[in-house]
Amino acid sequence: MSDKKIAVVLLNLGGPDSKESIKPFLFNFFMDKNIIRAPIFVRYFVAKLISIRRSKREAGDSYKELGDKSPLLENSSKQAALLEEKLNTQNNGSYKTFICMRYWHPMSEEVVKQVQDWEADEIVILPLYPQFSTTTTRSSLQEWKKETSKLGLDLPTSTICCYPWDDGFINSCAKNILEVYNKAKEEIGAVPRILLSAHGLPEKIIEEGDPYQWQCEQSAEAIIKAFSKLSGIEDPDWQICYQSRVGPLKWIGPSTEEALQKAADDKVGVVILPHAFTQEHVETLVEIEIEYREEAEKMGLHDFYRVPTVGTSEDFMNGLTKLVLDNQDKKKTVSNTGVPLCPNDFKDCCMRQSNSSKAA
Image (cartoon, rainbow, N blue to C red; front, side):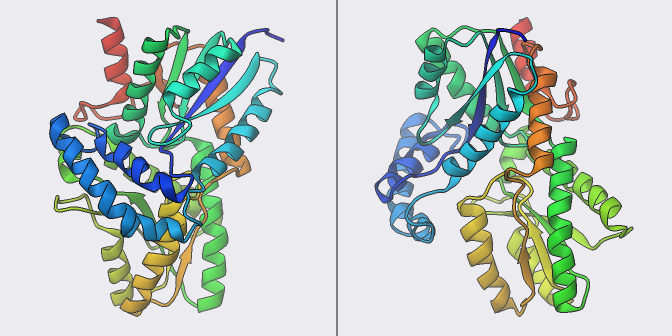
């Protein structure tokens, strides 16, 4: 067995851990230059205003449904513990997983110190976002790089930027859909429509070169293909859509609300999977399970079924384990296939950008 100590840093968004932390969490989120693309003095004003308003209204109400806190850290911790256990059965080194959140604790500064205290020899960075976006993975990587530089952590590092059609992720999604799909079909006596709902983004971010929408579409097609193979249904009724739209900007679509209205008009039930999330949190447990369900009822769409996220499912966790083992010696930024996934049109391809900047 190798005596190398390998720190596996899992990147995620983060969420408030108490009622008092909702406002500072939102402030951190909207201060991110990858979220609000404006000069810092404008971002500060906007972040201050939104965090005050939303902590008292929409966000405050949503987190109230969950006991005034997010379950994201708890659910990510379960994934981290299982991944660490699986990695340490492989005889490729000694592994320890670290959760690194972007907008609430534990954040990069804390986690860098944890990795230093453990005296790691190498680092593997693994986002818990299957699809890359400048608003999620890039933002977390920038913050991690800033803190490692500030605190003097300079270790060989392999970064997995995305895995939108990784077999473990795709098969886990397909199996989860099939279980709920069969239940829905039996209960309503008709074939439901599958909705694959990802978190939305303003169109201008995609137009600037962010590959997120393309990767979400690729994931959706792969999931439906795997579902067809599992179920024997050659051409299932399905649609991709995007949730969480806020603000005055035009967002990518169709929105999840529009997809629900279409299903209501077509008089078909829906089975909805949030396929850009890998664990349950406010967008799945409140936005989909409560808010979209209520909206569907108002539309006359009474047959509404939410599919669980991949969580700690065996296929997904085996997929993450393989991703780490296959890429831990790369010492650069790679996708799950080892080559850039995004078409050349997307200038914000993480793998191309990261490795070309290192070469330069």
